[in-house]
Length: 168
Image (cartoon, rainbow, N blue to C red):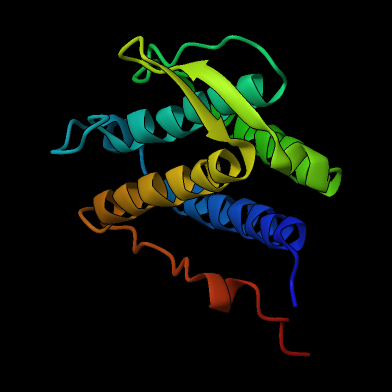
């Protein structure tokens, strides 16, 4: 049986692979195409990729015990795509390193935080860590959809396919 820690480690590995594939596809677009306003919550491919980064940083601040409000969810942290891509690689490394050190005690805790409406919540850490990965997957799906509206074919991001050992 797989432990919850092993499950989160698998999700972190998948997360890094999926982000790499998605960013590789997005890198084939022009800057104008990535920033084109589309019918999406964060307005563009570029805006959505930045939002995922904003979310990661909010949650990792909270995991570290900081009071981090979830404001500015549409902030463009990196206007330059190459800088955003490098930051994504660093963030995914940070996530992999974080889950490599997870403990049952950490997962058994709760975190109190203020959401973007100013409401204070206390939630189990294991649920919040699952939310971090679910949040990324949710918004990668939006980017995947926006990619399908371009000339660049969206990559397959199926978890079971990406985690298969490569054929020798």
